[in-house]
Length: 354
Ligand code: ATP
Ligand code: MG
Image (tube, rainbow, N blue to C red):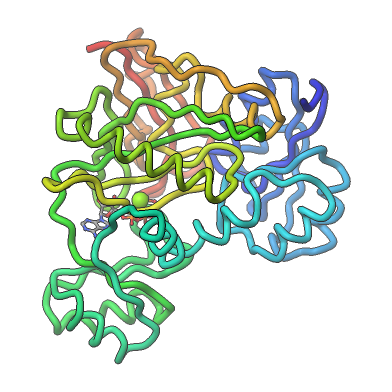
């Protein structure tokens, strides 16, 4: 067990790192953030920050020398950089989790190998390959870059064949997959945490509503169809974590379809659809992630209310802060980001009880 006073390195400086650092501080740890951006939201609450590029080998080595263990809040850090760090200090989750979760094709293959079902998909490496994929998958479909996509970025919808040129250009002509449209009733996520000793806890699943490709709300309890599919999805997510040898939080997104759950994607880190756990669960995803990384026992994940709703504050939504802060039933989380650009996650609010 990592003793209090130790330093946890966090790769990535966004709001997830900010909330991880706050949970780590409660347990007596210091956090050292490594991030390329100025004004990283995590830096406001961390003991130290290294501002450097993820590819900067010297900066990474100096960072590793100043921390006792490393975790991440952003999974797209270059694998070679993570390998380099892992030779110097323990990194949780490890390279294997990142290799799979960084690549939409690898994660779909991995989950299918474990018996999970996904949307129909095909590999696309060229403009001609896109035509072949359309012939195989049919339309409508979504073209997604294999790497670096988030919040609906790196995606283009193809409704009719004549959209293909524009879609291929829109994603920057990169290695991609074409996914058939899934006619789902709801979206939900399984969030679990696996400790260094292999112990796992998972949280009750919320139903997730997206607007314009960005998560808008996570609500518990979810509708009956999701409740009926949560057990199967959680079992699959647990198998994924086990086979990856994952340590820390793992989030798996699912589509609830009439014929059962279909896996969409995974994130090897704390997840936006788990923010409700800060007030809504006996242990938050952030606390259990830090516990896993530090080799501490995990805490149970029971619900603190029968109805819980997390709402993201996106762009100008955050301008409502005076009203939100005046409402005694609302737990307000603001990420300290300067400019409320459209589509930018500025904060979230959680309500317990109706
Ligand atoms: P996020 O960062 O919000 O998880 P992302 O950019 O990683 O998003 P996805 O999760 O793959 O991308 O897709 C974003 C949203 O688009 C999904 O939550 C879902 O609402 C919709 N979507 C994605 N793939 C499909 C599909 N095959 N069929 C129907 N809807 C889809
Ligand atoms: Mg997603």
